[in-house]
Length: 438
Image (cartoon, rainbow, N blue to C red; front, top):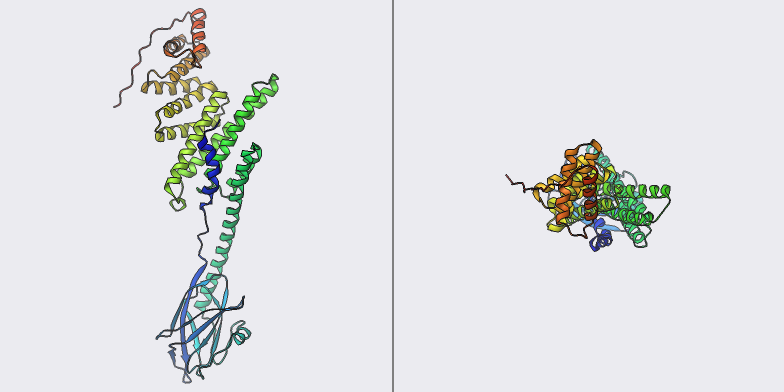
């Protein structure tokens, strides 16, 4: 049965994954200057010129602005993607319509001619504002530089719109997948839950705000399914069916382990710009490591260990040991990798891993038993009596101190008795000392 913290994380996931939002700009400034071209061809700035702004795609106006003493004007932000038309009027000038204005143009030059200071109505502006207009002696022709700037901003608008559309779709997929996946898990529809979490991962595979949560939740579901499959399988008598089911258990646990490793790598290598709350990041790291440890232990208990599980454990167990502060939990995790090796029959790696533990804690019951069994196994395989002796010695030390209720006690006693009878190997007293730190 899983701990409450994991179940809570499944519910919390709906909040965690919504951290990503669109960060692309929607507005850009517009600016320029207004000049009067006199009859003699000379030009001068027009101070106090009124610029009335209209969007060409919708009815209604936009707050107007006036030029300063130097004839300059600036508009803080206009919507990217929209097209605007300016109606410009000033005392002693003819009204002018300036068309095809886009957000981001900051070097516009509006030229006016001499006149009576009148201005156009909105209806007149809209009728005469299509394309590039020359009205009342004024001109709205864009310079080459302005045309280039306009093209650049139109390209930017297209890129921004595309990214925002993609981000919106991704957020929708993520939110739906986490909810539907959690609901399916609660209903014990594990196949559907896994499929939904896969959808969430695929939506943004490397995003630290969602992918690790989906991998973690998926790992929990896979491990739950593996345990339930195992519990049903042990009651099956048909050997072929039993082997097929155990293969499913092994694969589920391996897939869960691999998912935890992927989650860890995303969290550990997350770009600084994607990390919102550092505390949430550390919590997700710890939950990933704890989830992995739980799955590794289930693989040992069911004795269904895939090489992929061991590869994940080689990375994640040391990481877990580095952050876990609970001594009992740390001791449980310390022996996990060695146990995984032992279950797969990799006695040499198991022995090496158990002995590392015994160097730190010479009386560790789990390590004594594991090392003893592995040494005896290797001794039989290689017909190496020295290893049989060493294994018997460690098993005797274990059996002498372990309570009768220990899961390995009966097996250890039986194996020692068998070694005495069949191999003439009598356990000797083992004196082990704790390795001193340099």
